[in-house]
Length: 355
Ligand SMILES: *Cc1c(COP(=O)(O)O)cnc(C)c1O
Image (cartoon, rainbow, N blue to C red; front, top):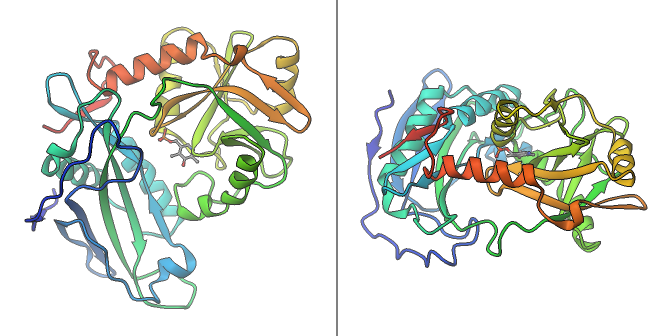
């Protein structure tokens, strides 16, 4: 158990309008901070006022991007209590990221305790409007001032919290996706399976290109052959073809999403066949031409489930389910959001009560 010192803000901010929260615009009054020093381990867990942090310009995170992050949410249930969704899975994933980034491990229980404690302190910031939540962004940065390339000897683990709105203000509208065949996101042996900032910096050029062409997101293909589908932007991707649900295997180049894992567990429980073999983009296009591409959707904490209405790959444009949300996509969305917001009994054991 961490001994978390409370040095809370004495000047609370005004809470934003719950109908205009957006995503990642507002931050709560306080944040969690804990430091690491080589030889001493993690120390000085504390909750302090949300404020800019002061770092030496030579801090290693600025130069060699030694950092990791996570994303999860706290949900307000109908009885007014607050819960997290599978936070232990985020903690385990951060351990895997840290290992790959040569960042010291953070015990799973400490990660979960830190999230719960910050949410409890900021409980008045957890919104109650339909579809809203308190997004948590835990991250670790290398803080040692040093310009040589090697792992830092000091780090900070910080959690900030942001009240966020319903991802889809106008309902679950299908998105248009551009299949990227030039840039790649991840390669075998690389960092694709981690949530590290560098993965996203490298993806921006492709995102800008897709936006310029009128597409909202990018679907990545594998980095070696540019042949197999991997994932979408910051979401995992599922394809329902002729009754079978496909999603890319998490074998190093794909981020193992907590939402992905939850969808697979539900689909299998409902009796669907889920295939996690590699799926060639050519098979997706072929299925579309034969009328067998029934549903496509992305999964991630921010949007939960995002239906895909159109896929463009080179000169082929596939319109999916007449640009409407599919049956399985809707069922997964309804089931997962009901559990997250406590509208339905959690028979999966996924929720963690905060207060
Ligand atoms: C965070 C993320 C996901 C989704 O993971 P969840 O745990 O479901 O939020 C998928 N792909 C990438 C690249 C991500 O960064």
